[in-house]
Image (cartoon, rainbow, N blue to C red; front, side):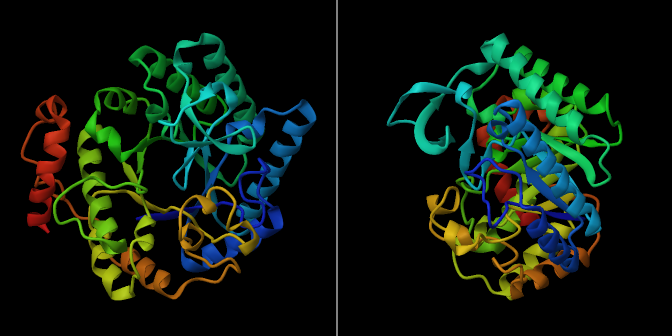
Length: 373
């Protein structure tokens, strides 16, 4: 199973809209290589690409320098672009939000700070759609062909922000795919979805046919099921479950995000090893840790880390790039066992039956899944 992790620069963070520090990334990439990770996921914020020409060029040059460091460490990378929800916080450019604050809205980072704003219906504006495609084209043109670049995670969590109609979503997705494939057909393209799409999969099922795989994230919240438990072990079991449902539903290789469970309780290696072995033997093609490295203490109060207690300790590595003891046990457990067939035999309905009432079936099938372990 491919094991990866999302890299957020521990000395620059994200709020400054800067590319990762290349020297720091080089050091961290070598530590990740030592842990046996094969790929880093680098989020690219759309707002980072909105400056004047000189600023945009500087950002893209910095991103290329970061990719150079990944290549020197012997790893590959996948760009999350445009990255939207990172460590539980939405990061969007100004044209994706309404101008008026609303107490019903969740936090969003825009224009240099966190505010409570509702999403705009940007899918209905052809001018905004074309602008986003043009910005994405510039990004793809700058980095395509780099030896470290192995793939893309596109429209990550975008379907949750402002629900589009099928035609608009299909147009944007196809446009992004074309921009990538026209320059480098070798790059894999993954559609980024939150697990909540499994509660309303009609739109995403159609879109999944245009991509090579699907990433399921959203561990900042969890499905409300019976006997879920807490901690990283329980989260891994849930990742197996939603990943298996997604693989069956979308008929694509599935990557699952994990790591949020470390916030729920103290986790010891013994709690994690058995669920990790189950994850390695199940359907998902890859597992991605939600954050590779903890931030430098000076960033602890900055978004996203300052938005939730304990978020600054969710990484596989501490802020000095040293591996945490329990992480090596978890990674060894995953690498030691190969996938097996029949992991979805607990699913006792057709896809048509599931999509007719997904909320009921997602909760009901959890009990069948637990019985099958």
